[in-house]
Length: 628
Image (cartoon, rainbow, N blue to C red):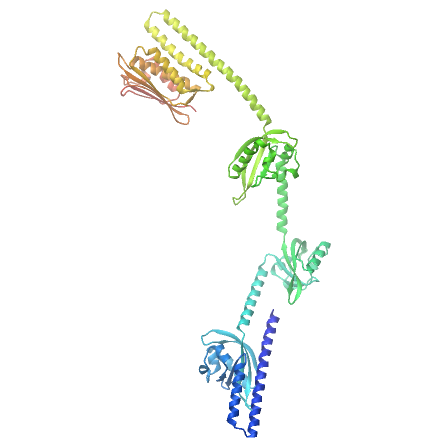
C-alpha cells in the first residue's frame, strides 16, 4: 500500500513538472517573438501587451495554483486557482511575503530557508501544509524552481502548488486502518500466520509467538513444516491444494513448541493478497481446553448414562414440543422399542388413544412450571400395556430458560395389586366393625332394658330416677354405635344427625314435665367428629341437657335450651350448651356433689378442654377442644 501511495505522489510530481515545462516553453516562445519584433522594428508596447495577455492565459489556464515571488519572497503574481485555494483576494496577497500569507509564524523560518536555497539555483519539490485565510490547513504538493531573467540571473521563484488534501486524508485513514488492523491482529485470541505456498512464513502475530515460544524474528525465518506435526498428512496436503484452488478450509492438527511439547490446534486457511502477491492466511486456535472439556463432557455423559441405566425406574426427557430426546435403558425394555424408534417420538405415542388427553395435559402443565403426576397404562411394542405412574418437572438451564421437562415412570402393577388387596381387607374390616358396632348397640340396649326392668321392680322413686339417668347415658352411647353402623364412615360421626337423635330422645323423656321449654340446635351440616371425641361429647350433651330439663325451669317456668357445635379452625372445636333458666349457684362446679356434673367435668378433662361455666341469665357451658 505504501508503494501505491508513493507511486501516486511520483505521478502528481511528474504531471506538475510537465505542466511547468510546457508553461516555460510558451513563455520562451513569447520572449523569442518579442526579440524578433524588436529586431524587425515593431512597436514594443504592442508586443508587450501580447506577452502579458499570453502570460495571463497560460497562468490562468493551468490546473494548479501558481505563484511568483521575488527574492524577498514577496508575491508578484498568483493565478485564480491559487487565490481560490488560499481564500485570499489578489490585493491581499500582492506585495506581501508568501510565508506571512500562507503559514503561521512558527513555520516561517522553514519557508525562508527554502527560499534561500532556491536563490542559489536549487529547485525544490516537497509536501507541506499551508494555511487558508480562515485558518484551515490543507495539504499541498509544491514544485518550486528559480525564476531567471533573460540574462540568466535569478530574480525570484515560480511555484506550482497542487492541493493533495484528499490524498493525504486517504493516506492518514489508511495508516489508521492499518494501525487498527495491526492492533486487532496483535490482540487476537487466535494465532495469525501468513505464509507463501511453499510454507515460508511472511507475517505472524504475538499470539502465535506466545503459543510456539519463538520470537517474531525467529518465526519469520522458519517454514510451517518446522512446527506443524501433521503437515505431511495426506488429508492436510489435499486441503492445502483445495486452498490453492480458492477454497477456505479448516484442518485439525498439532503444533510443536520450542521446548518440544505439542498441543492440538484448529486452523482455518484461505488465500489473501500480501504485498502484491497471493499468500496463505492461517488462523490458528489452540483447542487444548476445548478438547479437555469435550473429554470431560464425554466422561460426564457416560457417567450419567451409567447412572440412568442403573435406575430401576424409567427416566426420560421431553423437549418443548413434547418429543422424547433422552431416556434410559429401562424405557427400551418396558416398551420393547429400539433407540432409533424412540428418538424424537411424541409422548402420546407410548399410550393408547383414550389416554392421550390426560398425558398431553400433564405435559403442558409441566412445561408451565407445575410438578405433575399422572397414571396411565404404558404401551408395549407388542400391543400389551403395563400400568405406570409418571411424575415430571420442568427442565431449565442456569439462566432460567425453559428447555423441556424431565420425568420418571414406575411400574405400579404390584402396587395396584397390593392396593386392591388392601381395599378388600379394608372392606372386610368395615363389615366386621359394623357388626361390632351393631352388637355393642344391641348389648347396650339389652343393658338398658335390664335397668328398666330393675327400676320397675323397685318402689323408691329416687332409685328409679337414678336408674333412669343411667339409662339415658347408656342410650347416648348406644346411639353413637347405631349411627356408625348405619353410616358409610366407621371412623367419624355426623355431628348434626347425632345431636338431632340424641336431643329428640331427651325431649321425649322429659317433655311432659317441662312443657314450656323449647330446644334449639345450632350445628352446621357436614361436620364430622372422630369417634374418640364423639363419645365424650355425646355424654356431655346428654348430662347438661338432662340437668337443664330437671333443674333450670322449676314449676311451670318456660324457657329454652340451646346446643351449638362449631369448627373454628383445623381440628379446633367448640361445644356450647346453654339455657335461660334460674342458673347455677356461684360455686366451683368441680366441687358440686352432683354425679352428672362430676361426669361432665371428668369428660371435659378427657377432652383436655379448658371449659368455662357462666351463670348470667341462665347457665352456659363453653367447652373448646382439639381432635388432632
